[in-house]
Amino acid sequence: MLAFITFVMWGFSPIYLSAVRYATAWELWGVRTILFVPFMALYIGWDKQWPKVRDLLRNRRQLLATCLSALLIAANNILFMYIVNIGRALECSLSNFILPLVSIFFGVVCFRERLNPAQWLAVALAAGGVAALTAVTGEAPRYALVMSVMFATYAVVRKAAGLPAVASSFLEMVLAAPLAVAVLWALHNKGLMVFGRLSLGHDALLMFSVIFFLPGYIMYNQAIKVVDLSLLGFMQYVTPILQFIFAILVLKEHFTWDMGLCYLAIWAALMIFSLATFRKKEPPALEN
Image 1 (cartoon, helix red, strand yellow):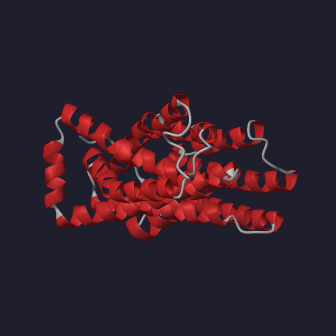
Image 2: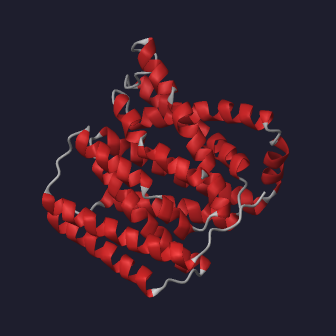
């Protein structure tokens, strides 16, 4: 349920990001990262999880994994916001169609998950859809591919290290905060920062990012601990479906029937894989 709610929230994220297009992707990321720290500190204090934070700091292996995951999630967030800012929300949608397949690949390689014939068929069909889309658009969906690999790697790092959801999420933001401050300072010196220069409504909308993104961020990191990568792929349909609809109906992005057939092939591949996975495995039991 945590994963499903997260994917719904991420599906609506382009609506918020389009509303704050007056700010650069760097500023959006910087403001959100800095605000995450105090909000998460308050939550950790309320939930009495400071001992878990101390334990994480004392565990060298998990601390190194947290540093790596912080780098990956920061890079992924900046790239995602940049893509939406330049009006390519469709490619964000495509990245979420590809992401489950990348997760499958990492699941097979890193966690020795086995695929049945139907699942391998789905992988081949999706690969064909991506190749066809490359031919139709005349260029590879490079942003989508990079985002997919980056975010799947983030999930693998967290799952392999068994990172505690809230404590590691807090440390990820703490580690990213100095860079966020440096970015905002550089933007301010160059006259590119809009926070504090427009209306209070614009500033409030930028600050709202912490409320919009923080719950999903924590819920996803919690879900990684108890849900395998293939099952996450099954639930992840919600995000690209909502983003796809928003890009076409609201942003009026360019879209052709040729592109539609390519997306349909990828969509069908994910459906086949998800159904095969659902029949193959029972949902894992939740852990405390």
